Amino acid sequence: MTKMTAVRHSLLISAAMIFGMAQAMSANTDTVAGQSIAMQELQVDVTGILNNDERGATSNVIRDFYVGAGASITSLEWNVNVTSYAGSYLSEMQVTFSDTSGYGVTFTPGDGDDFDGTTDYAGFQDLAEIGQVFAVGADGILRLEFHDGFKDLAFDEPEGVWNSGTLTFGIAPVPEPSTYAMVLGGLLVVSSALKRRHAVKTALA
Image (spheres, rainbow, N blue to C red):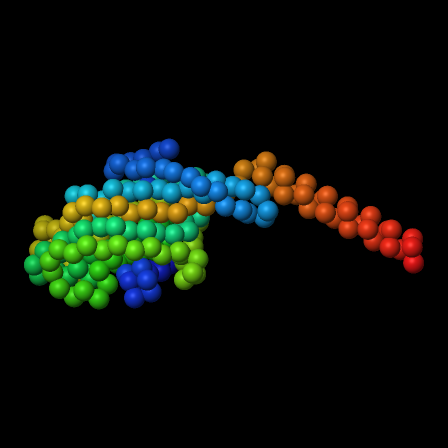
């Protein structure tokens, strides 16, 4: 069974190459091992995506985004409007974001809303805060599968629709080899300085 983690709204949480859907990429900086690296954001427009069946069904909408080999998915921000059709629940509308093997996080914006209808949901979750940061594989693909938690309606009928809005993913790319070289060089300089300092102290003793 594929290892999965369900992240719920009760825990404060309830896409370069692209296969479908409009997206926007932006970047800022963060520090890894003392070195500044580019932090990226992937914004996915979810407008009009149908919510069809339980996870893994062939009728589900799947979108793949290239985010870089080994990149880590560090956060999720959502601002969406969704409709669950009569007979199904808002609490069953889900999207799983994962690597291509299926390892990742299932997001349920309307967790706890056991009724149908149309609702806005917005929020932000730092995945590190809940121990759910994960890295994509060597293919660099982040996969989004829009699905239902439970199939209530007939199998040829969608359970709901993502009317509008965006999902924005925080991405920490794997540092370039040159960055590792700079870090290693810095550590060697520090090590050399410490050795010289120790030698001076020994000579003065």
